[in-house]
Image (cartoon, rainbow, N blue to C red; front, top):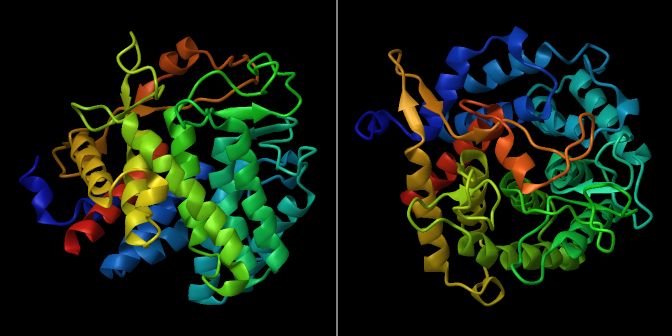
Length: 380
């Protein structure tokens, strides 16, 4: 496998593998589909692969109508997950100038304008989850909202975006470990919520991974100037404070991270690929974009780079190649959430019983991005 991966960069090989397995009719307006399409587009743009962008466009054009409406999207669901596929609409509009993409952007921005909020000003994760903020939601809406603010919005938008991150960090951070609980219920009424703090009971790897990626992606769009200095500083501080907890709970032998981050080798806990990809991507990118601060992070840059490199080596052990030369990625948690019907109680037993699958986009998308970051780091 190692020899075969030398044919071309792994990010390219995995992107081609996805393209080789999926047709436009199989793609949905769904956060994980948007994630993998955005990842493939980024790889194609970096390496100058001309066919990637048109392939991604074809996928989106099965969902975007001439008037900008989006097939299967329902604004009255007030579901933050449905914002994530919209991140690529900015690139489609920039690349083509077609008004339908701009109109679709506005439809999603209108959802955020009307989206229900906690009393403290945070977006509910979904209408069906009142007064709840999940770490996942910061990734789903944050970078879209920030790019909109940068291209079409106002200074007040950035203040609102940063407030969302600070609010979640304030309420979900565990002072002992520095890890973030999966979610926070402002009302403290959910069965999974601590009656005093409102936090869910465990640190789910992918949830914290979503949050880590979201901070850096938002910072891509907040202008690096005097006017926005305060907002950038607040997010950069949080990002650096997350470095030590992330590294602390990295498994020593494999370099990967566990499904339940602080439970280690507890029976049925396992090393999970999507969260590991997200943390590798986070560490590499924080350094690459020049925001790593040793004093705030509590570790040296060399330590963070070694953790990222070790994590990526571990991820590559999860790859396999089929007879057609396509790559497959294993060890991905299929899905995890809280509440709903049947009710998900956020217990350790709940997180470790969810299906473990291969090639799920929630793992493949971050793996492609982690691979690209590893390739950028090795090129320096």
